[in-house]
Image 1 (cartoon, one colour):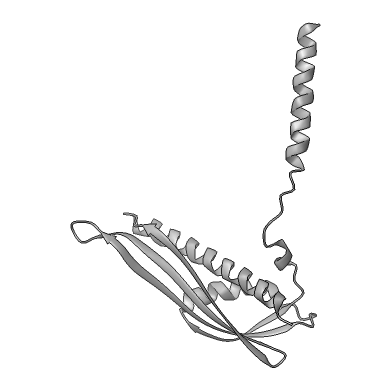
Image 2 (cartoon, one colour):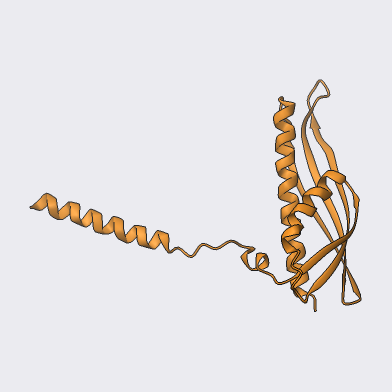
Length: 158
């Protein structure tokens, strides 16, 4: 009887913890921007072609033809890889990837500019294939982050 009482208390505590953890209130930071009622069209892209393709694929979710809020966007992008440190043999050990994108926004005849910069310091990997894959993931994250910031900016324009 005594052991049954202890096991039952453990089950009740576990159940209460499970309920609280399940209802912790998590929600994505940019959830509101993903549900925006806007129509973004890219009219011009210049700069790093590979990075522009990543930006274009992230911006496609905002091609809402039914929206009254229409934005025409020109994009100029640049990717830089800067050496931070080298070893005694002159081989790069650490470097930084920098993505800079200038958006020119045309909305109701008014032009606004937004320049965004993302950077990350990286330790060079001996495996060049893995290093390229990692850089690609970083660039995808940069593009996604920049589009989220662009959408937040667009939602503040009148």
